[in-house]
Amino acid sequence: MSEKELFKASNRPDGDLERVIIAAVDPSGPMESGAGASFDEDESLLELAELIRTVDGAVVGQVVQKRKKPDPTYYIGSGKAEEISVMCDGLDADTVVFDDELTPGQHAKLEEVIGRKVIDRTQVILDIFARRASTAEGKLQVELAQLEYLLPRLVGSREALSRLGGGIGTRGPGETKLETDRRVIRRRISDIKNKIEQVKSRRQIQRGRRRANELPVASLVGYTNAGKSSLMNLLTGSSVLVEDKLFATLDPTTRKLELPNKQEMLVTDTVGFIRKIPHHLIVAFRATLEETIEADMLIHVVDASSGFAQEQYDSVMEVLADLGAKDKPMVTVLNKSDRPDSAEGILKLSSAVPNPVVMSALTGEGLDRLMAEVMKVLSKRLVRIEAFMPYDEPMLREVEAHGDIILRDYVENGVKLVAEVESVLAARIAAKYPKNGGGRA
Image 1 (tube, rainbow, N blue to C red):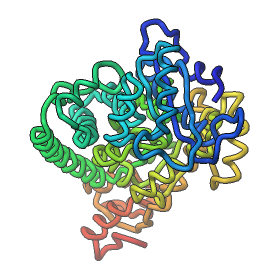
Image 2 (cartoon, rainbow, N blue to C red):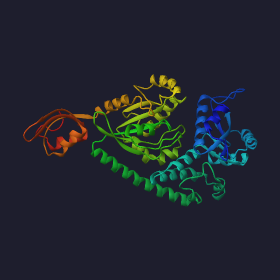
Image 3 (tube, one colour):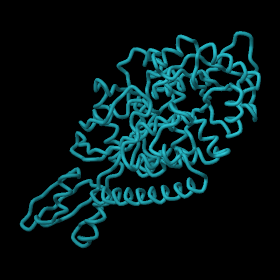
């Protein structure tokens, strides 16, 4: 990554911001004279710089060491660690952030040699989540992830904690609770897990109510900052926070959408995914991610203007596979088509992704096509029924409100109709009117 790209990623005047050097190991092969990071590591470092910008840090330098695998003691070699120490003095850096999760031993050794605060990518992501969590549920999940990360790193307890100091990687809802010992932390972890289980139970009840109302659910998924919240606002007329920062959305938001065919559905905006997503976060946010697992369909939003659109698409698909949601019905949206730099990403992904929708959530271009694709997916969930129901039957109102009526005949005591409705409603009609034509055709 060039110095120009690096500081563009930070995109802030230095001022009083925490000055950061980023460091990584590139396993692509031995370092050649004058060679920089490989394509994959270049992408990862640009993303790390963006993460640091999100927590108000200023990237002032970078170090990449090419080696087949990280050093078990120092992550990078001891000589490179000493080089970083000298670099910190020259650039007046406060903090060194490593692009992979460090072991407790590596962390301690690096701080000893470098003489500055050392944190890793996981801590930066946890810091962002701590800032973004706005609900009690979100704060619980962040605190769980923080404590699970901290527990094995309590070397000498107070001594290790004193190294944290302030700034990036040290804030969060569990900040005062972090100054304690292993026993208390384990008890707190157990308590949080119990509370999250209660959240999970409440979510299951909420999903059950949605099922009872025959409203299908679509989850917006995608890489962080792909434009999911902008699309949510466009689809539903809501006002979900939209920022050009990573993880602007943390707590899931659900809104109702009426499709052009008058069918209603629910759309959920979920937390974005990212490369090298910490395991602690996947575990802690399992209750939130279940919104994705339990959805009837997924709308996968891809930032087509990103130079790494294909890699981000692949990363999301890997996480969906881990969650058991990869094979759900899916519509892929190649977003941000209004940007001039989106053409290459659109061309590349259009040949790799089945039937993608090219659109701009900002201008609304392509919205009609997206709606058509969503209706096409949902139409496969519908069941055709032939039924006779009295005029005062409440389910008749549900068919008229949510179903697609093909034929309707008003007779003396009620209505004969042929319609396509959600399978749950079809089963209820068949159960109540099994002998007069109710149920499936």
